[in-house]
Image (cartoon, rainbow, N blue to C red; front, side, top):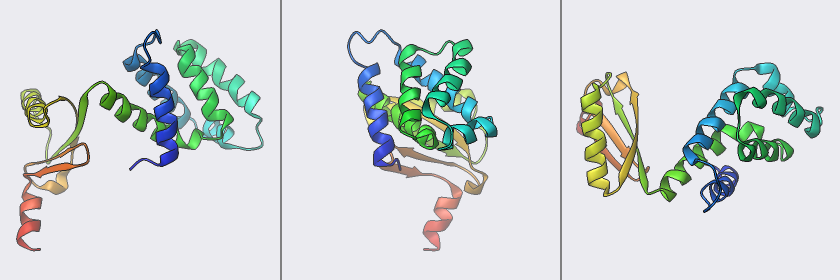
Length: 178
């Protein structure tokens, strides 16, 4: 569950990116945000400096500007990262990006779903499940697939954190013994 703060930042970014005439591709913004997050998460010293109150915000912005320049980060993404730095929310960046993706999908008419399976699914199985989720939800579906060996066999589908379909062996065993 996202915090109200992360949702607020994510909503502000969605409003800017999805506005008519924004001139940016929302999918590209999401990709670039993830790249920035990976950059920050991949370096303990960078993350420490960005989280440190001893380093001035202007210095943090300068360092991030130099690191983002070769990545070709869009000006709107760069400015958003600077706002996050200025408001000392770098530690919330991953949650903000997650919220951005969810709100963007909602605005674009997608339903988000997660499918957990006991083993890796074949490409045609994934495509069939994605089509089935879209049919049941009545909207286009954006499905994330994960492997959860604890399910033993079968799958568990969660759509928009509201609907849950549990066809796993673990789920059936849990129902028997509860």
